[in-house]
Length: 264
Image 1 (cartoon, helix red, strand yellow):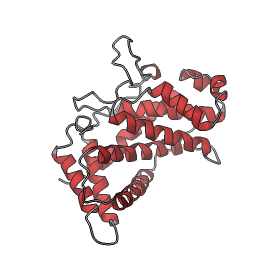
Image 2: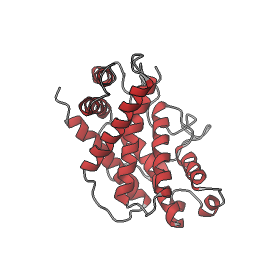
Image 3: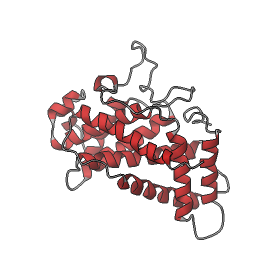
Image 4: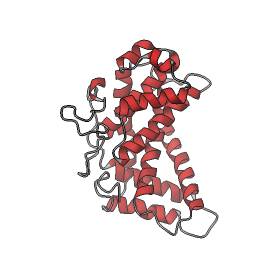
């Protein structure tokens, strides 16, 4: 199916374990998936994902200029987005994927505060953004500019997580702190990775839509709790580059924690 290359082979043992755990949570009968079943599924999924994330990024691994999508016809470009995963080869780069989304999140934060300098650093113009009808349109424009068109399931997940985070930043009654923005983005990114795998790789016919929704709702809550429990460092306002670098490093930490839970 669509993501078998994206995840280093969804038929590998770690991914088989994740899908088996999902099937256990969705088995017919009973009042619904237990918290233990959902936690086992999420842990198995995140452990499988963590085994493909690569080494921890350095503080200067993702300069902003390198994160912009390559356009069709550009030197070395392959069209569409900038390629968060290597096209059927199975390699993924969690750090780069997170960095690209974090740049857009930094743009949403700068948009809320009217930070013209940060927007310019990201290649965005405040006057142009202010000409758009509403916050969602502005966020969508930033995502289109910084992420490009998705050409791979990983990029669909990245785009969904990024846009959801950006809209929540705009709608929050009080401005979110840097740490809150990172936490929110990492929660959404992990959750969207779960969804893209489930919806494109041999979802069990025996699991009803209602039961699937119950699992996904509980999985989202568990992921949120897990990320919050890691107590991300409280940081002052960061430059766009520092925000991108910190988010990439923290994403690696989040996935590493799940990998350490693997007792197999």
